[in-house]
Length: 238
Image 1 (cartoon, rainbow, N blue to C red):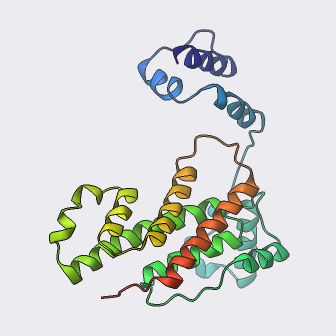
Image 2: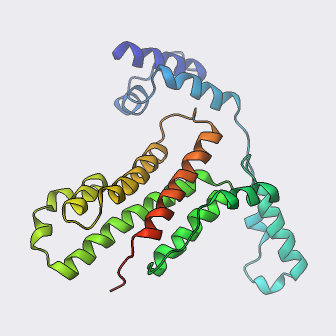
Image 3: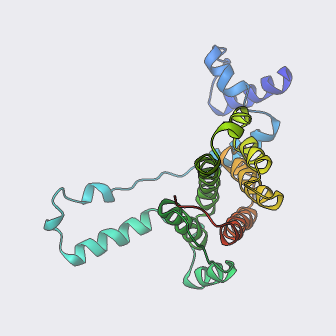
């Protein structure tokens, strides 16, 4: 392991123009522990393709918005859209195809906060913001698990929940507890656990090699899985 880390350090220092390795504990902790063979190519790609990015739109907006005419407002919004344009920008046809990808949506008795997050999740998928769509899906799944625990306590008391208290702090174990309490079926547990797994894969990202096509496919799977869960599982609003 030391040799792999030492090799990574040497390459890193060569790129950074260092003549001698910086052996400070902070440097070793941040770099040596995290940079391995597989990361060298990724770091090289990022360095090779580095871009300068400047965005002056925020400074063009006066404190008093009443000073802006309607045409000026539209120009600023258009300029902002150009400034944050990414390679995943979806054309009108792309968005229509993405909307067509979505399953039937027929949610019932969904808390307002969750409904808004659900709409954000599907809209981010349609607009090509697939990483954020996956992240929001993970947020919804965690909210769901806490909500279901809370509703179980309201209806059945806390005694049985206490037996599972050690499991309630981690999403994976919390879903197991909900299964054991009879709140979730095995199929429902697997759906929420799938969302948890995909969310963790991308939120705790340690490589940039995942193709955009794969990210989009995983985003759609997360959206479809949560849609299916919410279509079938009626939530209490008490």
